[in-house]
Amino acid sequence: MTDVERLLVCSDLRKAYGERTAVDGVSFHIGRGETYGLLGPNGAGKTTSISMICGLLERDGGGVEVAGRAVDVTAVEAKSAIGYVPQDLAIYPDLTARENLRFFGKLQRLKGKGLDERVEAVLDLTGLADRADDKTDDYSGGMKRRLNIGIGLLHEPQLLVLDEPTVGVDPQSRNAILEAVDGLRAEGMSILYTTHYMEEAERLCDRIGIIDEGRILAEGTRRELVSLVGQLDRVNLAASGDLPAATAALKAIERVQDATFGDGAIEVTAEGARTLLPDIIRVAAESGAAVSSVEVTEPELEAVFLHLTGKALRD
Image (cartoon, rainbow, N blue to C red):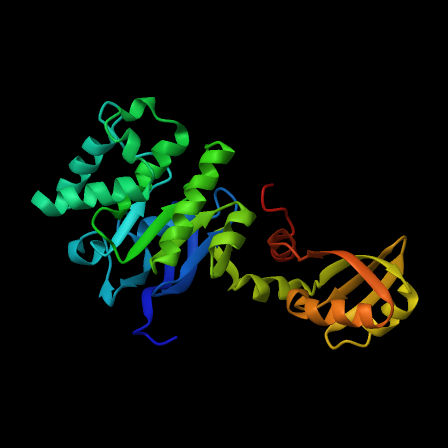
């Protein structure tokens, strides 16, 4: 990826509080249109890192560039390229959603027709248009979170930074938030997303940095990360017929490491099993097995985190 394609570049970020090092040499980049996830437990250094990235916190060392401009606490123009959505809600409960958006829009130097259009667009995007004139004190936790995201989008930033946006919301609201982020990804928004939920990182992020104790221990696509622990995908075929012959034939497929059978099923272990499914089903059928269902189980990021740190992600 060339520098032109890189929207955000973080280099060797460092921050300490007395004797405690909160961030210890964090470096990564985000391309235009990419969603990058910082995955780690509470206290790993995620929020401190993004506070420095957004120019909200003085760093002890390292550098940050967004859209080719250096970011620090005084860089007003550079920071205007960032939309920051904090973990703590930043809304006024005694104001309506529309009033909150208008207030924060004016702080971001929007005015007149431009402000009106952005408020309506954000209300539609966050699914709050039908409750726009209700006080936010009456909103559910998920609705408040969606409004929080909307405030970060008002000024049409190039980079959206989301810090644990689904913390403390019910499953339905959480899914609505994830769908909203999915929509932003589809529109080409560049996103930095912090979370301690593996399933969120797997669903949303093009690349993931695993962070613990202030350091990024590994980064890459989900497939690249799970390859670090050497685990393979498992394919379970519910089948009848000549299972021994089908099992033997399946072992001959390239990238299939093993195949076993028993109790009306064949289990195949392979690298990149989803791309092999057509071959697996074809070979099984040609060898006399009638396949009635297929289930693919892929390695989880939890195994990667355990491998890298010696502890579970949510310990």
